[in-house]
Length: 335
Image 1 (cartoon, rainbow, N blue to C red):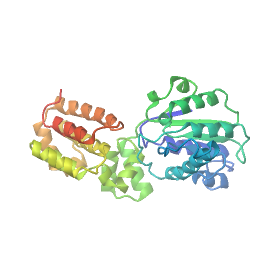
Image 2: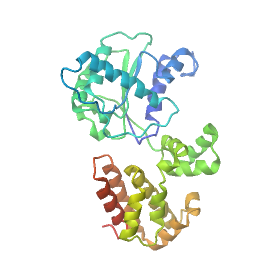
Image 3: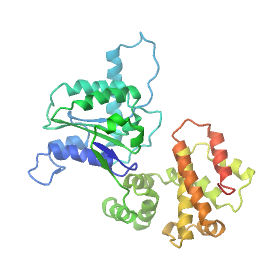
Image 4: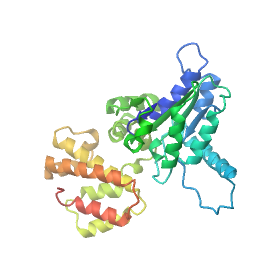
C-alpha cells in the first residue's frame, strides 16, 4: 500500500494502527490498544512489525576497515534507535534531505522476508518517507514487491509520491490522505491534549491541515513562527540595511522555518484582504496594515513564490544567497 498526503496528516499513525488491528487479540473493536501485541507494536518493539526510516549519512570508511556483515549490523542498530523518534503520539522530527533509506536496509528486509513471522499472524514492513530511498534501494525493493508473501504487508508513506519510481507506485494500492479542517484539529487539540482554546486556534491555523504540525507548533512555536521574520514582515519598507540585519538574526534559523513563517503571514494577510480575518490576524496589527498596502494579485504571487522556495529548502543551497534573494524579492512586486 502507498499512503500519500501532507506531512503530519496521519499516514504513519494509520500504518501503525493497521498493524495493531491486524494482530490485535481482542474479539471486537480492533485495535484495542491494551493487549500485548497492541502495546508492543505501539512501542515499536514487536519482532514482526518493522519501521524503516531514512538514516543519516554513513561515515566513509576504507574498504578493509569493516566487513559487510558488520556494516549491515551497524545500519540496523542505527535504524532501531532512530525508529524511537516515530512512536505513536510523538510529532515527527524534521526530515533532513541528506537522510536516506539505504540498500543495506532493503537487503535486510529481503532476508527477513525469507523467514516466517516470529509471533504475529500478519507481518508489516512500514517505510516512512519512502521517496528518500536511494535508487539502489528502490530497485532492490521493487524485486521484493513483485512477490510478497501472503502473511506480509508493505506500507510506504510519502508526501512526494512523484519522486518514487513509477514501477513502485504501480505495484502499490494508493491511499490518499487529505488535509484536515482547522476546526477539527482545534477541537481535537482541546479534547485530547488539554490545550487552551486560544493556543489550539493558533496551532490549527498554522498546521495547514496537519495534526502533527499542530503538535510540533505547541511544543516549539519558534520552529514555525520566527521572531526575526515577523519583525521583517512588519516593516513598512525593507531597505538593504534591514535585509542584512535580518539575515544576521536568522543565522541559526532553518531555511524552511523562514519560508514557512513568511508563507503563513502572507496567507493571513490574503485572508484579511478578503474579509476573513482570523484570531491570529486580529492580534497582529502588521497583517492588517500589509493587507491595506498590497493588492490581491500581488499577495497570490507572493504565496506562489514562497511555495516554490519552500521546495528549494530541501536542496543544498548557498544559505546567504538564498536568504538575500528571498528577502529582497519581497520588497518589490513579484512577477
